[in-house]
Amino acid sequence: MEETTNEDTVLGVVLLTRHGDRTTFFQNPRTYAASQTSITPLGEQQEFELGALLRSLYLDQDSPTFIEGISPSTSVVRPDQIIARADAGDEGGVIFDSTIALLQGLFPATHLSNITLANGTTVISPLGGYQYVPVETVEPDQDVSLQGFTSCNTLNIHTAGFYRSERFKEKARESREFLSKLAPFLDGRPATLENMVFDYVNVQSIHNATYAQLLPPTFLEQARDLANFHEHGVFTDTDLDGIGNIAARTVLPSILTAFKRIANPFNALKFHYSSVSYKPFLSLFNMIGVNENGEIPPAIVNYAAAVVFEIRLPSRTSHTTRLDSSESESESQSHSGLEGPLGLEPVVRFKFKNGTDDETFVSHPMSFSGWNPGVVASRENIRDVPLSVFIRAFEDVSIQSKPEWCRVCGQTIARGCDELLCHSASQSSIASESQEGTFSRSVFKTWLVGGVESSGTSALAVFVVLFAVVTVFWGVRCGRGRKSEVVTRDEKAKRDVSLQETHAKN
Image 1 (tube, rainbow, N blue to C red):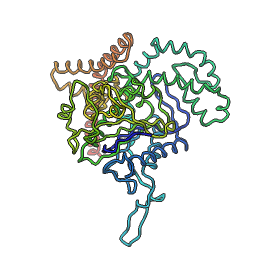
Image 2 (image 1 turned 180 degrees about the vertical axis):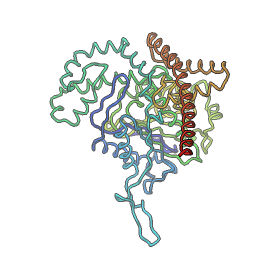
Image 3 (image 1 turned 135 degrees about the horizontal axis):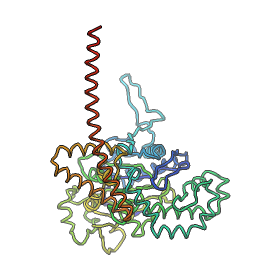
Image 4 (image 1 turned 45 degrees about the vertical axis):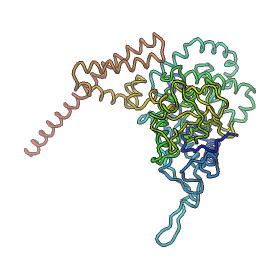
């Protein structure tokens, strides 16, 4: 069971979950463009049970992790206390449905969801008092925060570079014999490491009794191990700001903002929930060091897996966390602006539950640049990170906006990047010629760094040439667009005059 510190106060939580069980799903191994899929009743039940567990942990007033000030399980939900967001991208239907199922478990139907009319009649919400929790669907074309890994050119370069790496080639040689044996169970799909087909094997093993009986006993786990190697290589990076970590770098701004809001006693937010695919988990675990320190294996998380970041206010007696040796606790609090009512800074505690494999959430110590808890007497003392330390470590490597994403990904067309690039070109044309040059060099440098982060020399050379061509082309295209617009208006005016003259003659 998870150990607790009764003196601590849980101020709020930030939740990140993977969707539940679904039907077969295909992804392009180079771009991760995906096919349609749908949730199953099993997936809905997995998410519902996860929601019920979260309810018992954080909304039950008798729980040691009850969130202070939140509307408890004995009342109805307060919409101002919760934010729920669902990735509406390639697995959008599955992720949205998973979100609804989890919220049904977190805020189940209650007769308290009612209203009494002027005539004395009491009306209960449908379905026995269903609680309608607002859910924001996050469309990738409008908001990259929950799916920043598709349409990202520099990530595609990073992925291709991984496939060309010696460790990938070595793993491909090692797995060649197994993959040849697996081929008959893939229904004609390529049996290669680059196109590692684990999802089909996994889905069929769950839902196809004949397939499950015919598949040799070790094949599912062997395929899972290869898929773990494959996906971890794509969605991680050695540097915090590396392009391989982009799946988490786009999610982090909303997480950090939620941290700050929860820590603010004048803000109502208590529960922030993002529902996503498995990719952000791989990048996030890599960035916060729970893979490197051996706490969590570098693998694809299971269906209905969940991360909880608890924002806690420690009591004076339990506040035993230590900062990096280069900074004292008093120095941290002096510039954090996040002191609690007792003059103590809130801390972040990381917990993880890997789907139905785990009975409940378990806390794990994090390890990253700027956070070195040192050698301490017990695990209890190293699992909490001062909030200001966490924010400082990840704020600068987070991708804060779509324009920044366009630059980091070297994207000039998809997701509205073409309009943003034209707008930037228009803005720079107002400035002096030297300022235009500065702007171009700045953008070039930013995109160039994105390429350097994740590509070899030859790939980078191609990237640079393409970028130069696209930049010139886009300047011409935007200019033509503006000229065309003026001509169209002139022609319209001439047509209007001509019509008026014709009307006058008639």
